[in-house]
Every structure is written in structure tokens, then in C-alpha cells.
Amino acid sequence: MEGTLSMPILVVLVLVVMFLASAIKVLSEYERAVIFRLGRIRDAKGPGLIIIIPGIDRMVRVDMRTITLDVPPQDVITKDNVSIKVSAVVYFRVMDANSAVTNVENYLYATSQLAQTTLRSVCGQMELDEILSEREKINMNLQEILDRSTEPWGIKISLVEVKHIDLPEEMKRSMAKQAEAERERRAKVINAEGEFQAAQKLIEAAALMETQPMSLQLRYLQTLNQIASENNSTTVFPIPIDLFKPFLKLMDK
Image (cartoon, rainbow, N blue to C red; front, side, top):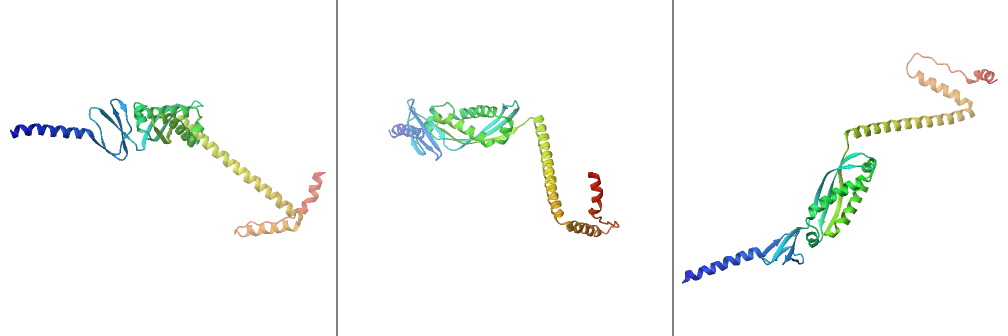
């Protein structure tokens, strides 16, 4: 008699344990549970211990942490008809678990595809020089467009960064030649500016010496002293400029 009574009790205990195992769920601090009861959504629950009704409730776990999405290299034709490959990285997180589950089929896949198409669209509207020099502007445009598009999904785009721009080999060679030519141009401009400044100083020095004729003789003596200090056998005799003035006047006539 006791054996016959213990068997139903054992079966009941097993069923109760199975029910509790299916009904009790534990969520981590970064997780939320979207509950569907008979097909209708209820408020998201968690974190911690939650209880659902097996067979009636269906639970979908949603990770609320920041997700790093790697955007693979995209083939882009720039505004000036240059073919490049651009890759990026997107950081986002789910702000509304219910919207992320009900408003889009797969928010991870949808965000990835949207990031790829947006990257191609934004880069395709810019010239190559702008893409290379204004990455911050591209990042802000991408973030603004993605954030606006994913807002109905309950997703917040926190950061978008262009990771790598791959140029064709012929374009790399052309840019290297351009950079070399630019460096040569700057060197020539700097050299010309130095010559111009030196000429201005010489004109000012000549004007100053013209007011004091003896300064020219002192300059001759200083030059002679500098040459003699080099231990060479060259002898320099300064000739006064006044000796040439009669000849200069004859040439003017």
C-alpha cells in the first residue's frame, strides 16, 4: 500500500521540479527578458530571478551591453570616380528591449546591413581628398544617420569610426608623387623667401654704409682679418671704391 502511494507522490514531485525548472529563470545584470504571454508582449523583466508560465509564456533574452559591430570593407566609388575600400566599426547598445524584439526581426543583422549601406552612401558623396582628411566629419555623419534610423528599434548608436581606407596601388603612387612635388615646391619657396630676405638686408646695409663711408673701409679690414685667420697664402688688398668713381661717371655719359 505504501509503495502504491509513494509512486504517485514521486511522479508529482518530478513534475513539480520540472515545472519549477521551466518557470524559474535567472537573468544577469546586463540582460533583460522580453515576455510574450499568449502572443502578446509584456513589460521587460530582469535582472535577477523571474518566473514565467511554461507553455503560455515565451521569453526572449536581450543583451543590454555595448556591442561592437565590425563593418567589413565596402567597395566605394567616390565623387571624383576613385574606387576604394572602406571599413568601419560601430558601437551601439539596446536601450529598449521590447522595441528591439518587436520592431525588427534581428536587430544585430539589421544594424550591420544598415551600417554597410550608410558607409557606402556617405563616402560615395565625397571626394577622395575629403575622405582622407575629414574622417571626423564622416564619423559624425555616419553616427547621426545610423542613430536616427535605428531609434525605432530601441537602439542607441554611441560611436562610429572609419577604421581603414584601402587605396588602389596606382593611386598610392600618384599620391606619393604629389607629396614629393609638394615638398619640393615648399623647399623652393622657402629658399626663395630666404634669398629675398637676404637681399632686403643687403639693401638696408648698403644704405646704412652709404651714410658712413668709413664703414666700408672697416668692412674691408674685417674681411681681410677673416681671410688671414684661415692660414692660407692668399693676400687681399682692399681698393677704395672712390678710385672707380671717375670711370663710373664716364660710363654714365
